[in-house]
Image (cartoon, rainbow, N blue to C red; front, side, top):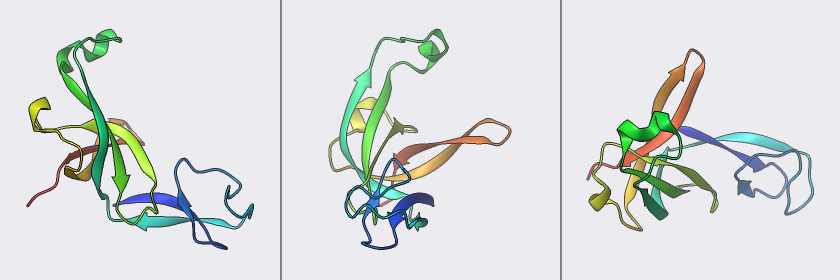
Length: 114
C-alpha cells in the first residue's frame, strides 16, 4: 500500500502533500491509505545516465502513475521488473518499495499481475 494526503473537509486527495488544501483552503488534512495500484499516465525511456550511479540501470523507464483511489493524484517514479518495450500508457501497475538505506525506502512500480 501507499499513502496520500486528503482534505478532511472537502475530500480532495492530492500529491504532493502540503499544509493547505488548494481546493477549499482548509488546514484539516490527513493521510489516507491507498491500494498501491494505478495506471501509467505517461512515461519516458532514459538511455543516457545523467548521474554516473545510474549507468548500470540503462535503459530505465520513468513513469507518471495515476493512483487508484487517489482522486487524480499522480506519482513520478520508475517502472522496474519490466523491459522498456513493455511499457505503455494505461498499463496497470502496483507499488514495490526499494530499500535505499536504513529507514529510507522509495516507491517504484512494476506491472500489476493479471
